[in-house]
Image 1 (cartoon, rainbow, N blue to C red):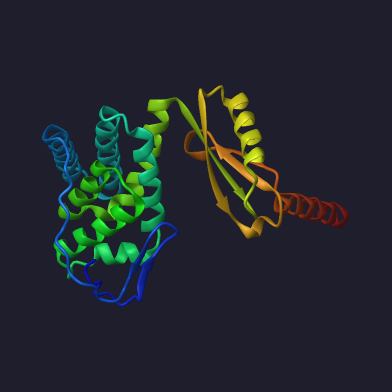
Image 2 (cartoon, rainbow, N blue to C red):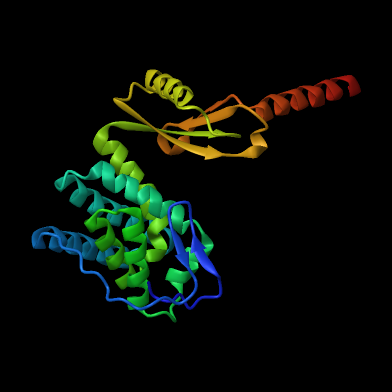
Length: 247
C-alpha cells in the first residue's frame, strides 16, 4: 500500500487497518468489469456531477449524494448484487466516519494515485464488489469523496425502496442477542406492514439500560424502552410535583 503521508499514525476502523508507515509501492490494481457495466457507471456518475454543479449549498450536496446513490444502486441491481453492495456501503460509511480517514481523502496535497492505492487496500481487505471499488475511484477522481457519508444515507433509502424494506435502528447499552433483534424486527414489521425489516445496531452507554428503536421515514418514529427515558419521566414528574406544590 502506498505510504500515507499524513499526520496521524494510522487509519483504522472496525473493518480495515491502514498502517501509517511506508510500505513497498505496488501498481494500482485494475479491476475487470464488463466494459458496458463500467461505462454505464461512469456515465451515470458523470450525469450526477453535472446535475450537482447546477445547485447551491446544502441542496447541491443532497442532490449530488442522491444522484450518486441512485447510479450505484442501478448498477448493483443490474448485476444482481444489491445486497452485497449494500454491505460494502455500510463498511465504507463506518470507515469514513473516522475523521482521520475522511481527512486523508480530503487532503488536496495528496496525489490522486495515492488515494486510489488506499482505495485498493480498503477494497481488498473488505472484499468489495468490483463496481464498489470503481465507484470509489470515480468519487476520488471527481473530488467528490467528501460526499460519501451522505451517499451512504441516500443509498440506504434507495435500497429500502427497491426491496420494500423498513429500516429499524436499535440502540442499546450492550450488544443484544440475535433472538431479541428478531423479536424487535417482527414487532416493527407488524407496526409498519413492511415486506422486509432490516436492523442496524448502535451502542450508547448513556441509555443506562434497555434499548430504543427508530424506524419510519428518516427515523421519525421512536420506541423508547431505555432506563434513561424512565429516569427522565420520573424527573419530569418530580419537577411537575414541585411546581404544583409551589403554587
